[in-house]
Every structure is written in C-alpha cells, then in structure tokens.
Amino acid sequence: MSDHAQPGYSDEKAQVQKRLRRIEGQIRGLQRMVDEDRYCIDILEQVAAATRALQSVALVLLDEHMAHCVSDAVRHGGEGATAKLTEASEAIARLVRS
Image (tube, rainbow, N blue to C red):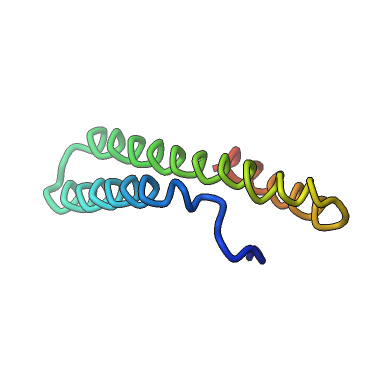
C-alpha cells in the first residue's frame, strides 16, 4: 500500500468510477446471459469485452501512478525511488500476464 495521502488517480477518480460502474453492468449482463442459457460464444464475446474494459481502467491507473507516485519518488531519489520503480515494474508484469 502506498504511503501517499492522496492517490495519483485523484484527478481521474470520477472517470475511473464511471468506467467501473459500466463494467459492473457488463458483469451483471454476463450473469443474466448464463441464467438465460445463452450461446457460449456470445457469452465469451462479452467476457472479452469486459476484460478489455478492465484492462483500460488498469492502464489509466498505471498511467496516473507513473505520472504521480513514481515520478515524485524518482524526483526525491533514494530507496523510495527504487521501491516505486520496482513496484511499477511488477504491476506492469502482472498486467502483461493477465
């Protein structure tokens, strides 16, 4: 967890929340599709769309993290900078693997 009082995405918070609410609706739609015994490929297409939407949110958060938290840490230098760069690198690796 970060030691910053304010997350880097604060300026984009409303946009992130709006996207997450839309994704929440997509997930409820997926549940309905399963309840209604819809065709597997149709459900898979919607799963792919929800996955892309989550990846889009992740990229916004990562961009904001790099622009604020990581750049601030690098500007101040020291072990904190190394830790933030490592943290960002690990987050990118997790996103690439997902």
